[in-house]
Image (cartoon, rainbow, N blue to C red; front, side, top):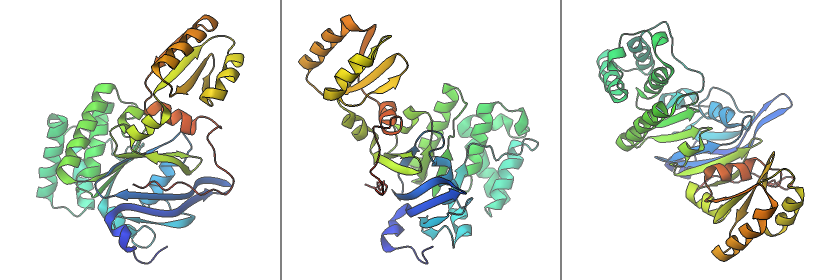
Length: 326
């Protein structure tokens, strides 16, 4: 591990170079390079098993890298783990709450671990619970709360010490839409008030659309990164979805001019960047030959599918990962 942060890394919340993690023969994270400026809202996106959670575990010092190096909040994760942990907040998939304790007892315990006084803990806990509308649950056991309430307390626990960086690993998984929106309004307010850096992983791609930048990870390596709207615009003007029982012939016909599709049972989706007249002509030619034709604007889900969901997007052997930087 590097002894001191390089000068440029002092202006970054997270800097990693060749970060790698192996579990036996399994390569979970493969020479990952990340540069996340202070104050950025950054999304790390990819399918299950792509290395997202392992990356967050390494950056938060829960897991030691096999090789490579990383600086978080100005501290080397290998040499200054205590300093790193004091500068970050973490909200992972598995709750860190003790369900037998009350909401206040959980928050007090988290604050004490961060070295806060009892009065400061109570003040901040009250503020956080008010933001979520949970002040009436102050003395209730966590086990008696709904899933959305527990998740809110989990996030309050992760930020009660006002961290420089907040790691969110699937923070709203399993929650209904109103609770997901409530949590994101809260995080947005925190970012506006504190300038906190946020590193997010999520399966809900619409949540990542508000990120300053996102990076797509596949088999432990970053394969694409950039501002969400730039990545969406890069797909083309439209996505064309065709449905039918026997699409092989049409798919092979369209692959030449339109490129590789995303295939899902009886549906094929293609990117299209032609003129409105060309689009109308293509629709007219397809309509009699398929069950259905749908034309829509691309979104971040489409970027996800084309980057991570098809073997057509791959690397040459030995090619290094794309650095997720500005």
